[in-house]
Length: 307
Image 1 (tube, rainbow, N blue to C red):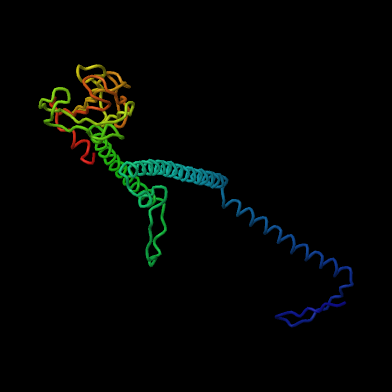
Image 2 (tube, rainbow, N blue to C red):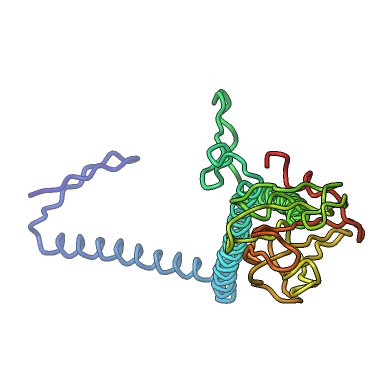
């Protein structure tokens, strides 16, 4: 095989036989020079690049990457702390809601309201048109919203607490005011006021109500209070007297048996004695008196006119 070379300026033509040994040696030498030059050039370029990035800068990059990783870890820790704090506050709000539900249920029961209308076991009915898509909650706005809701819960809890105290006060007042008949199964045999004395026939002033009932019938306190007398009392026989405060007191006389003693605290409706005929009495009945500031008053308005 021959290789023909043409000179650019002289136009001379040279022909080389590739099979000739000298031609082969010359070609190998030329290729070697080209490869060696390329290798040398690559080494010089690599040396220049290495020289352009000092080792101390590589160390700075490594330190900066480590610092960024530490900052990222701190951000993650702060975010987790924020989530934990929000979870704690949500738990506190849940506890407040439970207390409010329990308080609301008690108030409904105390005020005799319709439990179906005020059902604290179910969320309040809500709704809307849904025209506006709203804005997704963000962590800062969520924090503000929780502050507002928690403040409202605290305010509602305080208001319900005041309402509970008012209802309890009214109930206590109602408990200590004489109301109702001390004997459930009986009838009024003698009223308050002037009447003929059953023993002498003379006119006398009757200071209470006589309620006829079978012996052994239960006698109930018409109001809560403190027992200040429990025992025999002249013509009243076995008597119980209860002080209800605010200048009010009641007496239960002619009892067969007393079931309380002096110093006992009794509640409204508690059985305090059994009907009898002790003392100045013509038969089993209860003589019932109401005293206001130490003076006997007509018990009928307290007992009720239906008897």
